[in-house]
Image (cartoon, rainbow, N blue to C red; front, top):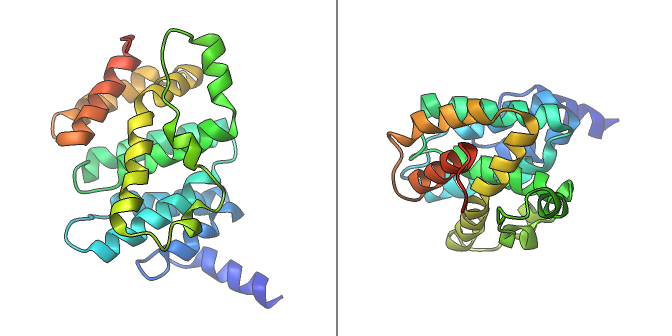
Length: 207
């Protein structure tokens, strides 16, 4: 009974730096909890404090696998793009969180086989699939920040092609392309390159 009470209190608590990892790990209790946690993570400015960045990356890994169905996943991705339009791309983890969510969703739905059958010309990279596990958040906690960051780099590298195919399936290609185009104006470096590739693929371009 005490465990249930503690879990319930955790769900009702406000998300903060000192509890975000626990709340992200408990996000499977409800879709509302999942949305609250990922929205909070996506709004945080990651400049300046390495320990804060590390906690947000680990929390992103914890909450990323929690989507329950296509509708929830589609709404989550649209919500995170909307947050980027306000909070920006360069100093937030929005793109990294989207990339982690897409990597988990892709792997859980066996999308590699589907994409090979329905889109044989468009190559989808799968390096991040080798890293996916339900306990990845806890498995990497002993790693230095640089190596945790490298995991997210693989997620982001795989993001454009996977997101483009999923957006086509969900019939939201135009909406996401529009958001990505607006975001691309202020994005820099790797995030700008990622957004440009997303736009290219969503608008019908190939590799």
